[in-house]
Length: 437
Image (cartoon, rainbow, N blue to C red; front, side, top):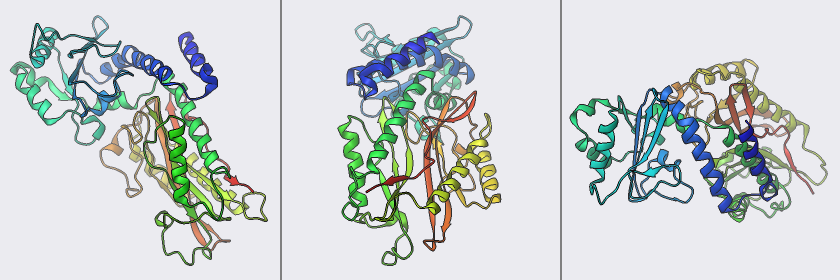
């Protein structure tokens, strides 16, 4: 705990809590990787009954799991990169071995001297035979795309070199790969709070007169403003932002489009309810956030009460949904129970929440999809685990009498599930952001 406190203090004091320089980012990322390799990975291998995990990638064709292990100064794998993790439970040792020409950063030292053994595959086989593992886990998976990283040629060549007595010990590393991708450490959660705060700040600036001139700015203009803002801050977007406009039926009489399919040049006007879907990548973690804003009319000083009440219904769906979280419960079970209770309360919800972390659409359990409200086979049957982050993504339809039409209250916030239950990583939207005069 003392070490974690020092880490947190250094992180938050740096650059007055502004975005870190590239050098400081590298220090943070490497420190987190060391912590994950030394303190997290041994537990994950034990929990998933894997004593040898082998990851194989070639430059520019990286295994998605291996990409999360790259040292901060490695932007790609080099040549063919092979990592071997061997877990000796009896002696409580985790060997971290790189069958590469170079050290794999500071965390994993090279175990291949090409001058002594020119064949990289032969050196890998020596390492396997010396340790005689009970299981050899490789990253292939039919249902979890992030865990299906070994290329066909690498798999075939590996199997052609592997001595026959080891072939029946090869198995999918699917469960271990998911655990590695989905599990967040205490250090990462300190950073995650900062990431979501940055995301919220950009959202707030986007939903203001700094970026919106009613009657002039289009929804596409606002989307590109957000992209430019991210670039200017030295960050990255993992998907292109989308801005949607909802209006009264009368105002929409000349538009025969669903709200998500309206013209790119649609101009934002006073009285519009705006919705934005936006996320950033920073320090190898991702955010995914959807919030609402309202453009005040000339005679208005606050968001209309009917929209305030509509948002409360969206918040209620969030509360119902997250109250169903329980370690070991599947995404499909949580989805079914949540929708049932929401509908019993007279609400009209749709839930499509997903794992969030080192990837935006990450590995872990799936709580429905927008077009799969009856559940999602396989990925939705995966159990909810602790120390995981999810994009709490959902909507509810609300009929607005003043507009003579339904609207969708669409919300999304990062949420953490741990031993103490559920919490939002950096709060959630409980009031619609007004775009003032």
